[in-house]
Length: 293
Length: 325
Image (cartoon, rainbow over all chains, first blue to last red; front, side):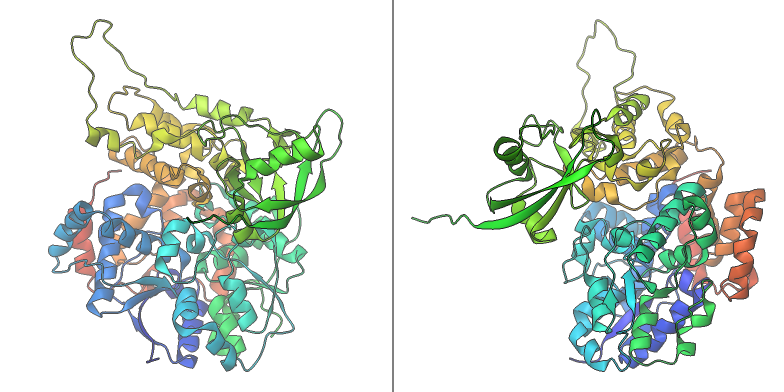
């Protein structure tokens, strides 16, 4: 296997509210000898909200981001579930409608770009599983996380809608019984926690407009992991991370029970197992203290 | 001549039992059965009733995936019992299966639930063609295939309730209309023959409104007819903006705020988005914001790293916009 190389679509969150995610992504990529070419030209994916306002504009902007990955002739890797959803959804819709693709390319033509449909789009989690391989990762583990019960929190936009998600990666995933993140935890030497909310919604996307509903979903998720005797939660999505890490106050109030657990990004977990120094993984940027290191 | 092999395997069913007239709490009963690869979930329900306990209750009717009566949950997954093959269920969940009603808190007897909330919400969206018709028409009222396509299969809904009871917002908020009602609203709103003037505005205001969807896509995976209700919710949002009927509120400003931010920076300015969405309401976010700031999680507007080639993005926003606010 040659050196793995991807076009990295960081998304906005990794550059703003989850700096630790950006740090740990780069630290892990270096350890795994994966080359990431950052798409610094990329715009926001619209986060499913621009899509509510102006669907066509969101397609054009996401097609532009993909066109830059195509210029590098690389698979695009995302590190946010919502970026993954919106980018892969754009690809799916353009690849399945010549008319829509032509209309989008007419706009991209104005800035000298073209969407061809030649680049794959995959989340870093699936890039590691499909391309790098969990067996190989397991061999590289120097600090097995064997003393930890780790609760996987999958994040909706990596597993649903299933039909779309299963187009983007080789390893099949069932949204009602997902296994990828559990497999990653096991590869890192940890013990997985099985709980009802692991494939459920964290409430992030309705936090402003429906704060109560959103906080109950957050609270239920953390409570489920706690009841499963988890030491901490791990997630591939920075938006789930933000919700579960920073909103414990509202969540506890909403469900009438104090809930709180450290929430690690998938990259931080891998980094710990590979022996990256904690300071390179940004552990000090968490609101809920990561108290086990 | 080829022969078909029918595989049989042992499956344990943990079945929800409850009689609202007699039981204080529900309980689960175990049934262990040999299941063949030919069977669907409904066959199992029938066998429990016919071979084990005649009092076991569930709804069934057409057995052809069209009446929408037999939707239940298997290991938390909403499923139309007559359509779902046991082989698929075993492949996903293994040989221990939990059979439950669509909504445990609405259970009347075993798998039978009170679906009143579903029908009440359905009725509220004016789920029929609402138009003035000429009682003595002189020509046919023709809908072209292209016009029919705009319904995007929303008319295939069989009202089974699978999406409604898979929705986590419906589960915790009685006010939310739910994906099925919104998909029905879209189905008639998109029909060229419909003349209802208020439905689109109404869905913005009914209950907690069309905006409280958490975008989890549970409904997309739940629908046995692959209608993709969340896509229809998105289309209702788009229609509100395209028609100019969108009112200024937290949810609409939150959606519009992304365009504003992208136009300015290419990327999102997270802090400014919250401020623009909430207006004065932003004060309630201050305590969490301070904690986040102390952990280096908030970048001020002047610290945002803008996208390279921002002029391209700005040009596209200008040339490709289709909505107004």
